[in-house]
Image (tube, rainbow, N blue to C red):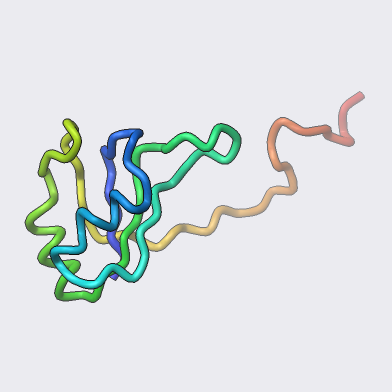
Length: 97
């Protein structure tokens, strides 16, 4: 199961995130999401655990404090596909006069 974690301190890295969840089971992956340009943490991430371990981690860690911040822990929802409208945003448009 993929778990979504929000409210992380900007100092938390992938290794720190994995260590939070290791006591619940084997962490298949742990990823703190970062800004593409600056490389700075966006304050959330994802951890993958087996279903039983994930459910226990969600129950025990949702609302817990880590590194001075209250974290929210829940099952990750599938990403919704956004329709492609041909405009990537902020770029050159051929229809300008």
